[in-house]
Image (cartoon, rainbow, N blue to C red; front, side, top):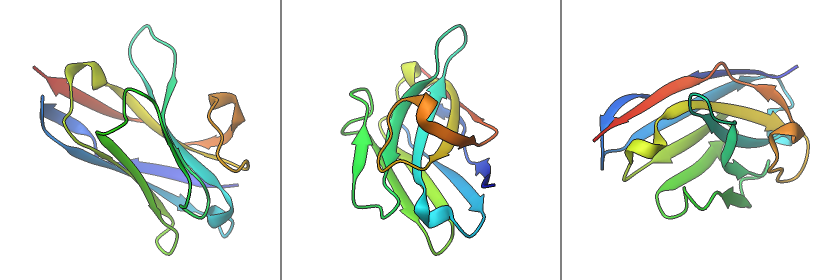
Length: 123
């Protein structure tokens, strides 16, 4: 199994930035596409960004394009989500996840999930 441990998050003012990290254990990490999802209270979990195992291909939800950057460092077994120009509507619990597809988008495609980290953006 792949174990995912998240760090980062917290409280930030609108317009500010945060970087989320997700560290994975397991020798097969580089073979997994990774995604970031978020879930606000009373809402469904939704994809924010995804990255292929090589890091060459990325996907961003419309809400994240131009503001968020997903990246990975396979040597460190870590995937990142750099969040810039944060808005109050970005407030949610953010989850990293791993999948065995090339660049999966639906949450159902992901096999492993981090514990989640709260991101709160104040206005």
